[in-house]
Length: 485
Image (cartoon, rainbow, N blue to C red; front, side):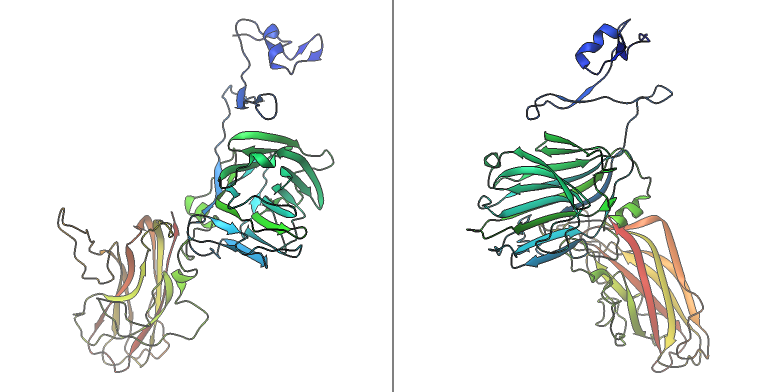
């Protein structure tokens, strides 16, 4: 198929209308446009043209999910969200949303916001989107109530960001706001207030491009806002968190609640080529932090700013009090008294990946590497060297290492621990208190260990000594590294 050399113009006039193109096409060639929106709100179909590379290949983009969170737990995920309030409060009742206005502020000094600790970048010609599932809950907003959701950094309960892009909902209606270094450019009302149904959770999406911003409601385009020519980009800061905010501009007359079910941030048309564990860690899914419904810091609770734990005897049926129940920590275990390791593998640490519920998001825990180091404490090694055989047990459904595997089609399936050895370390005769064992153990797992919801992972130690020295201990530190999937 051939194109007329003058396809871009008619009589020297640039052709931009799709309807005018057929007169410039020869031999059946066509120009391709895709319909992103049928124009039922903005008035005309919203068309975009694809792009072809130098070697005649149609260019496509791969989106990158930067952040995604749902509010199904009964507590704030303090690792992910920064929360500030003044009288007006937010809370998560465990019904799948975070609700703003649980305690309603009544004056202009009352408000609350949540913003992500994570910041998101604008990168060249790609677009950055924020998607919210949200809506008015029990009653419509009234005069002087304001709801914001989008990109920006609020700094106080009633102080809006000075940079960013967001939706603004008031009793006057829904509008978009582009804020560049303290200078706002509002769209004006793009959806009437009476068309937003109380009780509905709707999909609101902001797509921020280099030269324009799109505002969508339930997959219908409401407005395309061009970036002012005086501004080189949508907002000056280049990177920004995602946020939600409810505040008052004056006295309010009744109680209203806004609720948000989930938030997702996506970078369009760019595959950042990050390794998946790196992408997960950036999005708040590193194994060292708890997830929705888990106690923040619980994965490393034994490695806290506190005194060393007390010495404990090992056991293969239960994690002894004072030994670490986390993915990293410090333990002090008394030396086993026999030379046969008759007690078997002792639980040196154990962690339960919580079983999923409606309020606890079930996630696979992917372990990519393991590290253990130890030193001799309690007494000088005498008589015979002390050797330690370290290992990992995982996949078991009860803490005890003697958990059995149920027979085929037996009711209530349980798992026996699976295991891999980590290696051996020893302390020679005469090793003083505080002397380190001869080596640290580090295992990088080319094939990772996967701990599913309701399953456990444990660090185990087996002693091989001739005669344990009275009061001899092993003090150890360890870490299971990985990410939540």
